[in-house]
Length: 514
Image (cartoon, rainbow, N blue to C red):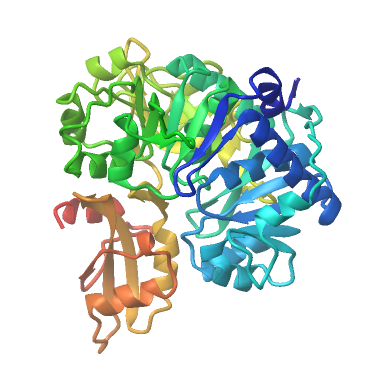
């Protein structure tokens, strides 16, 4: 099987249909323009930079219409786009860049200083006003001939882009995203949410995340709908768009939003905004949620407004959609993620790999065309995650007699703070390099604002005079802000198992109310 150029197909059938609205810049593009601009970028990649199919292009940029133009331009050129987390400092980005080995890059104007550090010696473009370091993106497009480049048919297993996720050992892993994964995720999303070309999505999650690109920007574009893009999430601005008060085009025409997805922190900030109580959300027809456990109080706050949040489940490794419950299930079974979508198969197995029955908890396994073929240049991690044709998610789940699933726990120690995955091992590795720290363990604990935050439990070295602020300051120098533990506790010893492993479940129980 193969995948065609669905952007070009939409441009042929609906050239004047509105495709992209960039809220920050005020620009909007119809499918004809979108296709032409992506084609110009593809020409730049091939003719100016001489990138060959399979070469990588690193993109360190905020959300914007440019980002999606680059994604589809890479598809046309056969270049693999590497979507980098702009929140990471240079020290954390460098091993990812080294692993991906890009041949060129594009960065936002606000990120030029970081780009200078991690992309030394590479050709680049700046998405923004012209600068002294590299040519600007708009000048690059203007320099192209302007002919439309149609993507050759791509095999389902060909790599389109890479999304990096930190491993529990701290080593970054590039999750391969194929054309087939994107296609089947679009089909699954359409089936689950009845998504169509009439839908308008407000995209607020960062595009370096699978949720940002694939829930539901890519599916909406596959269907011929419209994507309204926030540069960064802003609750007040999001409410105005969701309430039908957003405007686009020179005449300021209204553009009602019909589809939205947010992580729990996004929904929390929206619910806390003064305009939430009076907003009508009249055009909204589907509210999706995911990323981390949704507090019951938050579900109830939206239910009081007549809004049903459909809380699903997925991973970067699954494209991401595995579960999206319908509204009836979401209302009747709060917390359930429903049944697996269209082309995805799931199992729950015990420690011996035997299938569990209804109500029995075990590890969730996933299989289907939406599952990644593996991790970029990391055969060991690939073989550990993909065994016997199934992706082992590391998540504990169960299903009921109706076949509806619940995700109840995470096998791994990862926690999610404000929608961002945080791996304690990475923080612990840094803490062990801090003078005065003898032992350290990091866990996630509940937080009313960020849903979960990090708590560092530290055994000081003899004679050391450590303070909470000193620990946080040390972490700030080497970690992204959302990874810095918000709380610190000093103890005489860490609880350990007979095998010497830190008993993190005991720590989570002990500090649940920290």
